[in-house]
Length: 179
Image 1 (cartoon, helix red, strand yellow):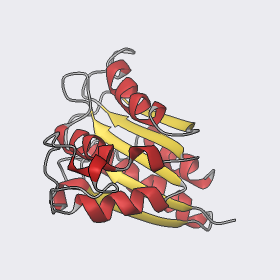
Image 2 (cartoon, rainbow, N blue to C red):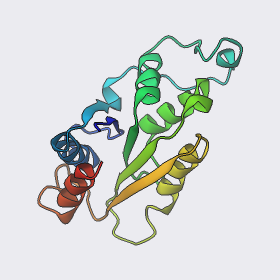
Image 3 (cartoon, helix red, strand yellow):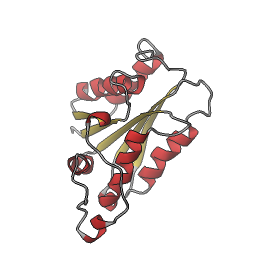
């Protein structure tokens, strides 16, 4: 049965390493017959949460009128959420963090999602992505019955497109095939 897959590319660089891995994941997921959409977060108009909690008094409607309202509906409709970010100071980047924070409007409605995480970093140490992964897992843990399905640790990647030809490309493609 085809699944609805939503890929959230948090890369600030089109064609950046984490964005390219999203494309490979998407290629595999599409080849497996799934419905796949990739959202390049930087192209969306998404403001930061201002903690007004208007949403809690208005059935999950956010007081901020921007692209997050439509994106949140796509996130809720997805069976699979792929979250991708480069590692910035051992954490996720601001683009994706803003999206995660804005889910506060309807986070209790997230149920039975499969999660995949894609991370890239210039550093090559084994621990460089620990905090980033915990940020992703922290979001998933706040949802109902999340299932972590896979993680890509793209280490030692800095320059745009440096990931091309690396083993991470095949890993992302094969992970997408398994959706």
